[in-house]
Image (cartoon, rainbow, N blue to C red; front, side, top):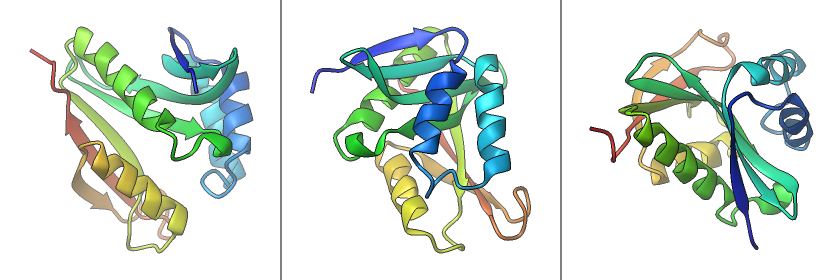
Length: 157
């Protein structure tokens, strides 16, 4: 597999929609999915392409000069467990380090709500060096407790 990564100053809603719609087990709440799609142009995006076809992306939301957030990330199902997500995240971290960002955070579904897909999501982030910070039991509603994870960007000064 030969991937090319591109940094887009403004995200692309067509890419966002195509990939999120292919991931209904993660993005099955229509209102939230539409919000990700609509907001995708507000944030920079790292996109992985194979043969000029987008196969994964990560949108970056800057909160302060020191901290950014993975606003939304998705990898096409046929590319799961092939290093695409890891490589997109690594490219994102490289860009953030160049911009002197010190921390990267992400929110995901907490383990108190059993869900196999999000168990794998948490495992991915933990494997990539993220650490649990706090659970917000009602941020996304009582049925969807939110876990905040954070990672120190290694090359930051």
